[in-house]
Amino acid sequence: MRSVRWGVLGLAVVAVLAFGTQGIRAAETGLAGELKTAITHAGFAAKYDTLQEVSLHLHHAINCIVGPDDSMFDKAAGNPCQGQGKGILPDIKAKMGIDPEYQAAWWLAHLADEAIKMGDLAKAKAAGHIIEVQLTSMSKM
Image (tube, rainbow, N blue to C red; front, side, top):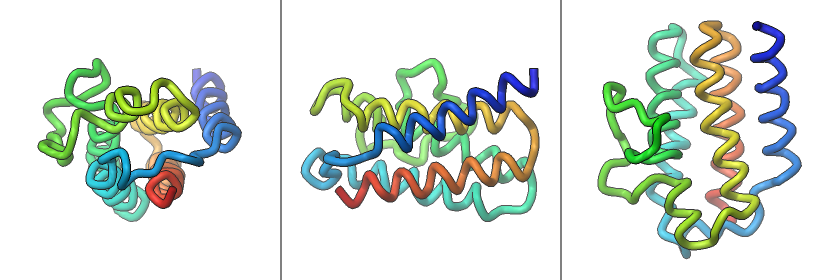
């Protein structure tokens, strides 16, 4: 089971790097607020020192990415992006369709989810770092 999760994480990283995050134009699409909040929480996940704190902030990043209408949304974790949009994925889809940026964000949400399920602090922090870097790249386009 552990090798399957590693495979999923590896595939997620490869997909994000392959798809890249060019062309999202965050300010132009109204995603700037959601991206900034998700970046902040992914950064918290990368920096905190307990699995509980890291998992909470990965949940926050997931919630900002998927939005409250998605099955991955964890209501108990809270919605730090409330009032900023419908979620990064739904907002990208509505404005640009299911394009490479949508695909990259989808993989980032799944990367965070798998990292939480692994229950390993170092891997969860690494996922937070990867998500922070990729969302920051998206926000600068």
